[in-house]
Length: 402
Image 1: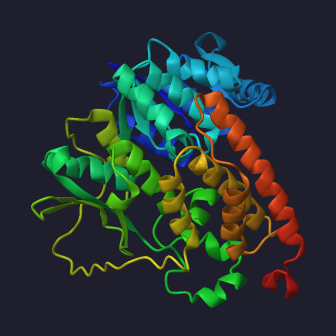
Image 2: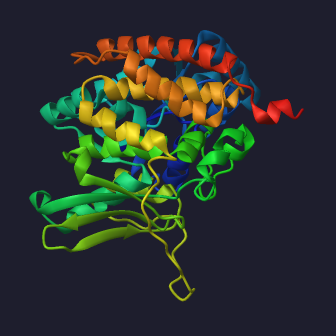
């Protein structure tokens, strides 16, 4: 019986992980559920999966969770230990009873707990891009030294992981990540200034959280995936290529030195890569749709427009620069996306804030997670200042029409 700590249990990946576990209760047990502020959903998860530890963001949320659990009728004697704050997240991931950590907390909030699990040699299902984008060198070095397994859960990196099983790592010449192109794949660059938050949140393929959906619209999400791929698979940015594939059926490809290209193809259902991470190296039956090869299919592939999707180019540049540049990239993007969703800057303003933040924040070589978090805060402060100055000079076209 393997015991899990799920970081981000009430998010989309956390909920999908629990859905997979419903069919594998004889193999896996939930030891800890770590959530943010959704006390109602967490209470329902506690009743169903009966963890020994539950962690929320703040003490006020903990009080709310106590009230919600009281409403369920679950005997207090059966409740898990209820805790809150960052230290509790770290202890949940570090608990000696835990064999597998699902890292699915959005943002750098999940970094410390994931790093702690890596240092202890645990298997980690990595669904949090920010962990490697902000601190790839530290986390991968810790995992290597402790013998921890980092199994990617993102569909693209999970696909690469599967393709790499077809050959020797030294024979790999190129990793190819596919991208849907988002909702503005065919939108002229000249029209992006009129894009509204509602339009940016209308992703053609995936249903995700707000930030990652906007990141997909700007293609920053794919830039983060390039950085992740470099750390996960030990390659340079020049060896990672992005291709536009609107149908999102081919998740990733790996090219070997003999010219062979292996592709990973599956339905667009996150439960497949989640289960792969849980059961690797075994392949077990997964609760996902199968592709119908009797149906006529047309798949398109093409290069991304790096002028229109400026953030993808900036991600490549930040990874080439190294050091803290990618940490600054992530922090500035999070601030800029929030400002766009709050209608304080335009859609193209996101890339402007990120590029100018990269220019202003000096690149350093952080030697600890604490230093990474300091750089993250500094970068956010610079980005917020740029949002203020940029927003004051921009008249948003959809607001002007009201």
